[in-house]
Amino acid sequence: MATLATQIQAVAVAWQIYAIAHNPLSLGYVGLAQFIPMVTLFFVAGDVVDHHDRRRVLTITYAAQAFAIVLLLTLTCLSVDDERFFYITLILLGSARAFGQPAGQSFLPQLVSSERFPQAVAWTSSSRQSAVIIGPALGGFIYIWGPTAAYSVCLFFYVATSLAIATLHTSSQPRLRDPSASVFRRVTAGIRFIRWQPTILGAISLDLFAVLLGGATALLPIYARDILKVGPGGLGLLESAPAVGAAITGLFLGRAALQHNTGLLMFACVAIFGLATVVFGLSTNFHASLVALAVLGASDMVSVYVRSSLVQLSTPDEMRGRVSAVNSLFIGASNQLGGFESGVTAAWLGTVPSVVIGGIGTLIVVGLWMTLFPGLRQLDRLPDLHPEGTSMTNLADAD
Image (cartoon, rainbow, N blue to C red; front, side, top):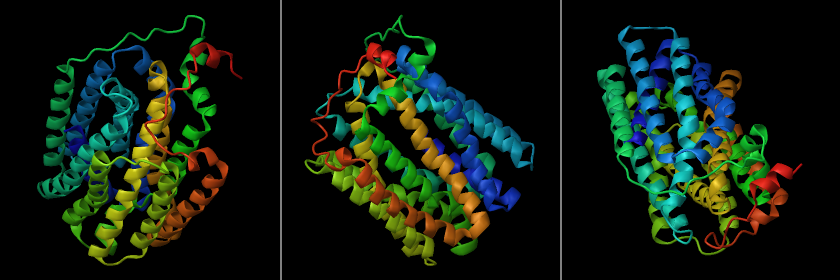
């Protein structure tokens, strides 16, 4: 339900703001407004998630997102045509997600064994992607009745999600703070942990730069409106296409987990992601564009599968919140900041050159990262991963 709400909201906000501003850069600001809170809050968010009930944190964050939707609904009902008010509301939305994302990522390992965790990632990602398939198309369809209808549906889903999680019964061991660690060292422990784990650093930074450069999806409203000329309904289908590829791939990975050469397969799929971005950027045919986006989503799903499993299985439970917060920051940078980068380069160079250059940049990053992170390239079986036993005391003493 939350993913459906997020996708419907994304379609509604993008179409509404572009209709107000008629400027590609305005779509970039949509991503930037949601990324800023992730940068400013991720230290605090990780520490909160590691030392409080993760179920409760998730409940509050979804309630906060529901409140942000109320504000968007109010702006729409008042016919506000200044996009800056929408950006301010998106900052609030991003603040809630800054806490919700690490809480959600670090919550799953409490529910399944390490051996089954990679498949759990695949199944949950696939179910989420199924909602991503439905959400944008549903959002585009609902938007026919205007943004008020779209935001009303989002509000219902966020409230229902918050209530559902609040009633979920789980058991977890208390995670106590190390009294010998300063506040600064405690909240920055996630960064130091990743610094000493080059395989994790390579995986999340590969995703960061690959998606940052290949952020074609941020410009989909322009493609739908000006290049492919398919309207809001077509925009919904374009938004859904990557999720179709991702969901199918997730179902496959859920039934048949990757057994060997996981690192090489991830690099190959990120390269396919870059190639699909180039094809989409050059396409003027709606159906060809849908296929390119589906391939893009399928290849990205493999990266999500490997990265999520690698981060959670290699991190001690008492640090998963802080490490997940750093991971969320990298994901947010690749998505929201990538949207800003795409908007800026589209304004400077044009929409099509921006997408094509970004896809080529992704291919260059793949080549560089295979050289810089040989351990990631040589990664074999995910279930064999386990925490290195890094303690909070070790991290507090580390330079």
